[in-house]
Length: 97
Image (cartoon, rainbow, N blue to C red; front, top):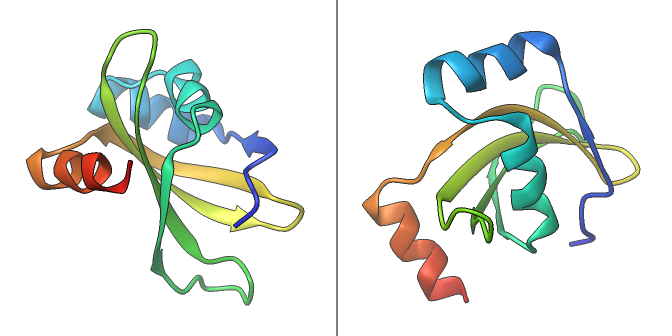
């Protein structure tokens, strides 16, 4: 899978990340820059716009994050959620390295 080249941000998702999950947009951007482990989650509502997750550890803080996004054309990602990983997700990431 080709790497994400651009992140699309909608205000409602940026606010949700910050308020509900205490994750900032710059942290999600760092996650995508760090070559995260990517997995398919489910088919999207539009053909070719499926939901994926990105798992990784931030170099700046050591924090483990998971981000859910809709893969858009031309390797763009519409981030819809992000949060700290749980134990099983962290284990999955460690095994993928």
